[in-house]
Length: 183
Image (cartoon, rainbow, N blue to C red; front, side, top):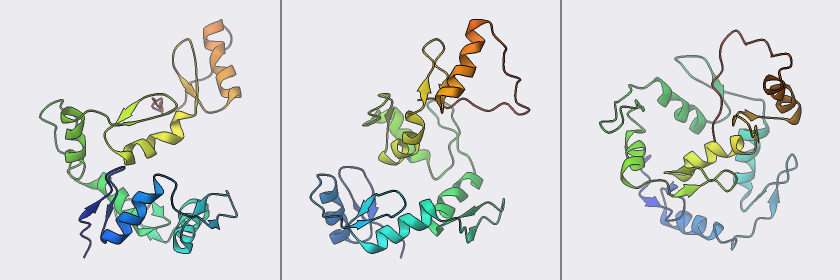
């Protein structure tokens, strides 16, 4: 069964077994010993299967799980399942009109009822779930233009962007406009 009835009170991650959830809760206060280190990035884990999962998801180029609708591939079944939500029917929010997928409408409604409880330490943007904060985190360390709030990945990109404010050469527009990540 895929049912996960036990929920972490700190980050809302769900578990099939109560003992796994209890063990996980301890990880939030640093009480869990993590002797298994990733040789690629140094991140530590409490169990060898967690380390193996991390290496497969983050560092491996192997992507055996393919989406049947768009052919994009993933390192794990969980990542593929999270992706397939993109292909699901969208449902309008009766409060703001946004169109999240049916799987995320309940999470979205928390925006209107609870407000953000998970706050980014870098930019102070709030999120309704820990999962949304984790998705946001890689974007938060980008460099912010102090004049117009554009986010840049590296200092050289910011230097090129600053030319637009200084009357210098303006970079050619891309063929497809890319949305600016926001924090």
